[in-house]
Every structure is written in C-alpha cells, then in structure tokens.
Image (cartoon, helix red, strand yellow):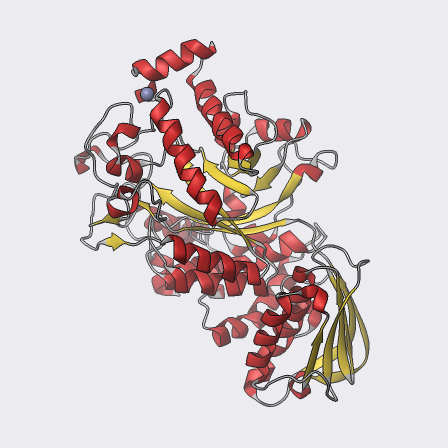
Length: 534
Ligand code: ACM
Ligand code: ZN
C-alpha cells in the first residue's frame, strides 16, 4: 500500500527517488528512551518479518529520540538502504512502525517482497482523544476479543479504549467488596432478540465478567500499545444488573432480575414490571456504594478518567421517593434534573480526591449545574445547545455524535460516508471553542451485537474513517477517493483475520426505498439483515 493511502493518512508525505524492500530488513535499533515500547516494536517486527532482528545489519530500522518531534508524532525516512525514525514519546515510536506495517504487511505476507517508496513523512495527530467504546455489558466479548481490538486500534493510531463494563443487562468487572455484582449481575439466562420493540426472546445465557487479574492483564496489554483505558460504570440509570444484586440501591427495594430486554421502552405485552429505573440518589447508601466501587476501579485502571455514564435517566421513581425528595428540598432544587447533575458532581468530587477526572454523557449537562471540569461526551441524536455552552465556558468535550459515530447502527441508516464526512464544526462548535474538543470516539453498543464477528462487522471499515477523522488535520475530505483507499485496504483486514462490512453493505442501498426497507427490517424484525447479507 502506498504511504499516502494508509489509515490514518499521514499529515505530510514527500516522495523521494527509489524504493526499499521491507522484507530485507535485518536489524533494529531503538533508543533506550522509548523503554518498554522497544520490546513491543521488536516483537511486532520480528513476527511480521519472521526472523530475529539484530542490532547491526545491512538494512536497519533505527528509532531515535528527538525532543522536537510533537507528542505522539514521528518523522520517518525510508531510504534505499534503511529506515530512520524520530519520535519524542512511546506512542510516536510505535505509530511510526505501524505506518510501515500498514504499508508493507499485505505484500510481505505474499512472500514476493514488499517494496516501499522512499519517502519523508512528518506526522502527528489532530486530536488527543482517539477512541473506541466497547459495550461489554449487553453482550460479553472476553479477553481475547478485547486484545484483538486493542491490536487493531494501535495499528490505526487510536489511543483510548472506553470500556462499558456495566449496564442493565450485565455487570462485568469483579468488585471484591460487592461479590454479588458479578455472581448475580454478571449472568442472565435469555435475551430479547430482533429489535427494541420485538417481543421475541431467546434462551441463550449470557454469562461472564473480568476478574481483577484479567483487568490488570488487559490494562498492561493496552499500555504496551499506547492505549489508555477509561472504565465506565453507568449510573444512576442503566444499573439494573447492580440493583438485581443489591436491591437496596433502588428507591423501592424490589426483587428484579438482571434485564434481559433492551432499551428504554419495551412492549407491555412482555409482562416486565419496573423495567426502567434509576438508583436512589437520595439514599446515602448509594453514594457509599459508588465510592466503594470507585476505590477498586481506580486501583485497576491507572488512566486519569472515570466514566460515570449518566445518560437516559428516568426520574419518575425519584418523584415519589421520600429520600430523593428530601435531597431535592435540602439543596433547594426545583427540577429533578438538578438532582441528577448534583449526584454527578458529588461523584466527580470523589473521583477528583482520587486524582481522576469524571466524564459523562451529555445528559449530565441538563440540570444546568454541572461542575465545569467534568468532561462531557456528546452523543444525543438531537442537537444539544448546552454542549456548545459548556465549551464556551471552558469545558472539555468528546464527540460521539450518533449519526457519525454510532457504529452499532445499521449501515443503511448511517453509511460509512457519515463517519468519514465528520467535522467538529457544528451545533455552535466553532474556531473559538473547538480547542475544548478533545477528540472523537466510535461507539459499539452491544444490544444487537452478540458475537465478535458481528462486532467487527459493525466496526469496520468505520474504524478506518474514525482514525482518519481523529488523526489527519483536514476537514476537506473526498469520499470517493476515500472509498477507493478503503477497498485497497480490506485485504489487510483479511490478512489479519478481522471482519468488516463489504462495499455493498457499507455504502447503503442507493435506492431510497430499498434503503428505508433495510432500516425498517433492521429495527423491526431482524438486526442481522445486513450481517447475514455481507
Ligand atoms: C447512550 O447511547 N445512551 C450514551
Ligand atoms: Zn430515591
């Protein structure tokens, strides 16, 4: 693959005379300043090349430390007799090597030599936050798939795994103080299938969670690839699995199972009672619970952020709850949204005492009283003017807008083009406040993603578009040219054993009636309509 065609496209790539056959590389020298990244780079290249790399040799890759290279960036020179790289941090060094790998791997594996153009590349990212969110709660993917995703993210210079570890349908991380969270909350025996309003239910159990040792293993694996992990424990809503384990977390102490149905509205005929509840934010036991959980979470996850969720909060039960109403009165609130945001702020203060920052979905702005240093993740399909206001007040935002970055949605609704054609300038975000936009993140909610194969189908090739939007400093994007590059890159995914949607799917049907029919089928009766056709 030409260097100009890799994902994400390098900022600046100047072609020189000549070529170098990557398969002839015999040596690797990495400056000691890069620490453990050197081991990872060596491991990667030796595996690709199928041989040990010596310190000295005729054709060498040399990675030097240079303080002048921007953070996470690199300079790369391919010459006819070797490769020189300069970087100022571990990510930069790793990303330079990923640039080489993406350009060379497919040819290399054919075994007929891998000719690279001689080039000088200067590269560094547009956004500091380049993420993917995996919902491991609705369905459980497990360590091997998470590691596969981390490898794939690193290849594309993505640096944040947002890990959705709890929801109504499952609690997936061991908390030693509350063992029932996983023993009860980590299991369900069936699932609603074929759509949010569908009354069909399967009898396939969904069981699984990560022990604290598993988490340590994944965090270390991610760190080696320059990826930070943001754990999300969603609350005060999306907490039914925890409430199944500890019913006292609710305003009413009800005996209810881990949710096996999805969404914030389900057909009455399913006969489920009390299916859309929030935890009681007026009861001090709830805050103690979250403090205890956070105590263990921050020990497991060294990165500087904790994600509280805070989205889609039903407040009906609060309105009838003496404890929640007492909290309303004590704080002088007139709107339950203020109580919601107050709860978020309280958790934020606790998280800050642990040296972490809080992040939550944009609903946490709706009380109007959010502390300004809480990071907001903007997802809602409907425009939210409070997000621009938050930016104007100096707040920070991650963008995961539904129509660009909800990778779990059907391609017929949100074709690949939607992701590629993203620009941060919308809804009041402009050149004066865009500096508060830390970056972008693709979302993989797993209500209807029940296998690694489907996860990869929904994710790719959208992840390539996300990587380019997050990394490459331009808002001028030619989709046609992009699509040609995507087609040229798909053999790399075949080689890596990573699944993806084919062009016939990721483009969405041209005929608007056919497109609407596919969307309708997807929502109404068959969430695998595209996957099965692929
Ligand atoms: C969300 O999709 N409720 C963040
Ligand atoms: Zn309450």
